[in-house]
Length: 225
Ligand SMILES: [Zn+2]
Image 1 (spheres, rainbow, N blue to C red):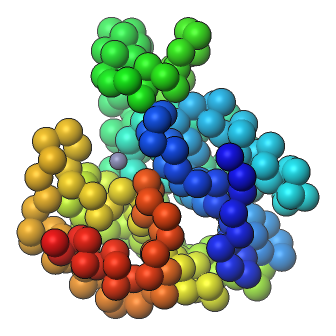
Image 2: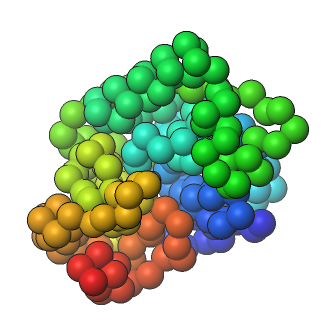
């Protein structure tokens, strides 16, 4: 896997289908850098950090979580610096954490082949809540680069966070545009609401969790299909 440069402030490690690994985003300002999503496991995160170090980029001081799903969050315990999640995401993480504490990791480990592959060799499942919990919107100045973090309604889950890099007109969506997991439906009203939100933000590039970066029109067409 290689690190890709998207525009002036943004790099990402591309998604992988086999282990259901999402894109991990990286935004570099003059003062600090921020990552988008922690990854599926510590191994996933380590690969990302190795690529950043090879490219001479500082490890992120902050990691923003787009939604609670395991493939985006189960490496949170191993991140450099602090993690940020909205209150609903944090609630889901705490709930999952309790479930694993009480019943063990087997039902998670046997959920599907991607999880089995990611955790093969008896890797430990570790879930932790976020260091910083927010509600609504938040703006972070990374130094010459402004990042807006916005809680939003979306068809995929009830806890989506969007991350917009203003100077680069790039919007990270996590899986917000996807159908609900695992039942596959995409609520029309929620899809329309999210589409309106995207149009208001007016990005040039959209980065979805498990797809290559595309122009906003592509993302909207897909969301409303
Ligand atoms: Zn998801």
